[in-house]
Image (tube, rainbow, N blue to C red):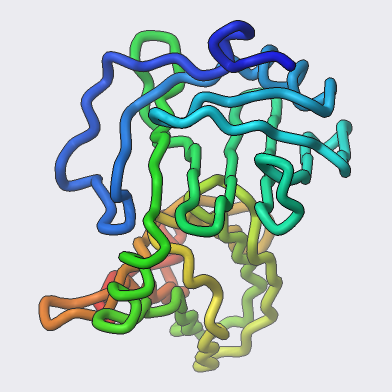
Length: 240
């Protein structure tokens, strides 16, 4: 069986994660880089080991979609220990559940030189349950309003902190119409929106899913379609 040290999958990064970017569910964490070629080779082998923080974890892959880069398996010989991987051309993410704790490798969107920076973090399940009871997660939602005198088509795509597409919807809106989204995500962290108006005006925006506390919680985006040829969508951010 190969190990991540032998195959060079995960390497410590000299990048320092800003304190303001550290999430409460990161009970232990560090910045790393991921060699996508070595990771893909290990996943395709179906049987390999990863060094996750200070723990060696044995991975068995039983399902894969190599074209799209998605792999599923289990860890340490226990079928309930779910392991999921995405390995794309330019990015990846990883989730391994060991029952008492889970590991995640997520793209930070930052670069250290010419290398993409990832955060490798561990979440303690007991601590997370206590946090959830005290401070429940405020789900991600958004609102769209058409304040123009004309009808418009607008599409919304949302990517979670691991850069997975979790929401995609197209709306045809009449003048004065307001649309409130369903609850999109309860995954803690920054989510990325890709918004396209009438097929030719596109931009990105982000908001963060957080826990409900006395100081605030998740950010909610308000997309207001207005009569402005240069900036036809006005975006407002509110703390839910």
